[in-house]
Length: 136
Image (tube, rainbow, N blue to C red; front, side):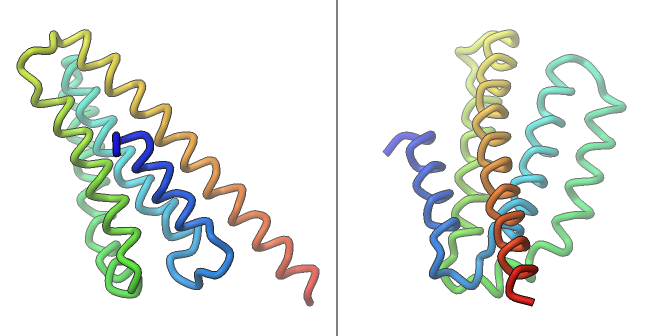
């Protein structure tokens, strides 16, 4: 299963209505951290050391609290999502056969896929909140 299909599969599992945990908001948190990591790699490729360090620090702080989400998620989908995205980032970033500009393009394409996933999670979370408000 290629990466985009695997990410889509994980996304659909998280969005399945019978799941209590992970919730879309939990996946959104995981995605935000991976976006910071990805953006720090892009900043490094662009030579922006200050931005890279800032994003790495933010991701590191966020990681301190995410372990609780992983512990609560008995399905392990959040952990799979996190590892799948990081693996893809690392594969692109460490590919010595790609030129710097090719790495940037590949990482930007991955960023677009991740942004779309995050958007799906945000929409699902908003729908969940709207449903809860209507029940009150």
